[in-house]
Length: 403
Image (cartoon, rainbow, N blue to C red; front, side, top):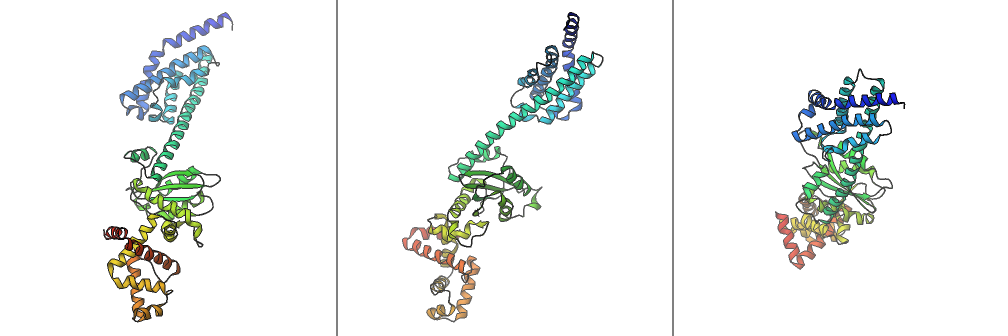
C-alpha cells in the first residue's frame, strides 16, 4: 500500500469513527420504529441489545481498519452481550438487528468510496455467520444440558426417589402436560431416532421423556389436555403406543397402566418393567401389550404390584359381594371349567352356574370361560387365599378395594 493510499484509508477510518455515536442513536431509533419485539422488551434487555448494536458499529470500523484478516472482530461483537440474551433473543431477531445496523451504516456511507461500501457488505456477511455460530454453540450446550437433566429425571422417576423439585425439572425439559401419564417399555433399536419419536408425540399432542437403560428403551408419555387440543385428545395411550412402535427395536413392547400425573409415573414404570422382564413367558404375546395382560406371569415372578392388583380386582370384590360367587368360581376352575361337574359338586342346576359366572364377569370384568382369563382368575384366587390365610394383606387390600 502506497503512502497516499495509506493516508486516504486513515482519513476514511477517522471519518467513520467520528460518526459512530450518531450511528448508534440512529440504530436505536430505527429498531424502535421497525422491530416490534425490541419496543416490547424490558429496559435491561433493550440496553443489552443496544450494547450489541454499538459493538457492531464499532466492529465495522475496526474490521475496515484492519482489513479482511480481522475476521475475529465479527465474532467478538457478541461477547459483550449477557449470556441470558441468547435465550431471550432468537436467531431471527438477531439477524434483524444486524440488518438494521447494516442498513443504517449503508445509508450514511452511500457517498463514500467504493472500498467502504464493499467493506460494509463483506462485514455484514461475516457478522451473520458469527451470529449463527453463537446460536449453534448455545443450542449444542442446551442440548447436552437437556440430555443430562432428562436422564436424571427419568432415573429419579424409575427409582421413585424424587422430591418436590421433580415437577420443575420436568417443566424445564418442556413438559407441559397436566393430564394422565403412561410408560412404554421396549427394546432399544440399533439406531435410535429420538427426534422422530418426539415429532410423533407432538403430532399426537403428548409430551415425551426418553430414557435408555441398556437394551431397554423407556418412554414416559403425558397427555396434553387443554382447550386448544381438547378434541384431539381422544387417542388412547394404546393408540399412541402403536404410533411410536416403529421407534423401538424388535421384541416385546409393553404399555404400563395409566396414572394421574408424571409425579406418580413410577407406578406405571414399575408395572411396565416387570411385564417386560416376563414377556417371553407368554406364548401369544402381542405388540404392544398392556402390562395388566401379564398379571399372572408378573405375580409368579414375584411382582408385588401384580399380586396386589389380582387380589384387589378379583378376590376381594367377589369375597365382599356374595360368598357363593367366590366358591362357584373356585369350583368351576378346579373342575376344568366344566358346568356340569361344577353343578354336581355345588348341588345346583347348570343354569345357576351360568348365571353366577355371568355375574362374576359383570363384577370383575373377566370371563372365567376363556382360557387366558381363567388363568388370571385362578392366580387371583390362589393369591387371595394365601393373603387371607396370613391375615394382614388380604384385610388391608380389601379396605383399599372398598375405597
